[in-house]
Image (cartoon, rainbow, N blue to C red):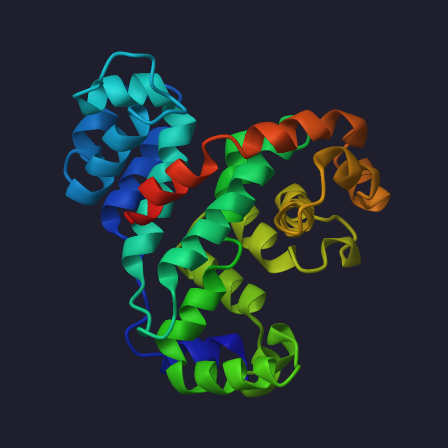
Length: 277
């Protein structure tokens, strides 16, 4: 069954908020004015609250409290606000079953996105904030599975509990895995093709003739996230980096230990801002 057929049968397909489309156009506009972006952000209470909270977080605070969206955008920066807007809009777009811990899902995703941003700072192949956004949406297909395939999701969870890989279980139960489903959703949301390809390729980017830089960064960030959670020191992690990927990104692994350590600073607070927990 093709993806077109599967998506045509889906009920309650999550939609990209119109406000998000407008804001992304503003962020892409080199002549965009802070006042215009702030005005649009102010139209959404959830996004406004998170932007203000982030501006006053430990990571960005400069000792003076920010009380307006204009000031918050200036303090955080256009690109970081763009990433936050995307994350908040996505978090609000999906209705998942109570058995699925969406907050934990977004905390884990935010950790990977933050690591992706840090790694990208050492690469000339991708902008750090673009890497952050790529990683934020890389596993959006998992949310689609939870919302639109609840019965299959339970069977997939049971298969995983019995030793199957989640990807194999998804392909068996649905016909496609979360990366394929997520890429199709991103495409239907009319986001830039770069994000479609980073979502689609991130499980095995080196299988492609021209791997998407975002997919490569995501793969590294997932590698680092797993190692960090296992208690492996940053200097040991970088020595085990897959050279095939770092060479494609023109990254010197020896310079990444500091970025990995920096990425961990304030990550929990920022994750809580994103999820609203």
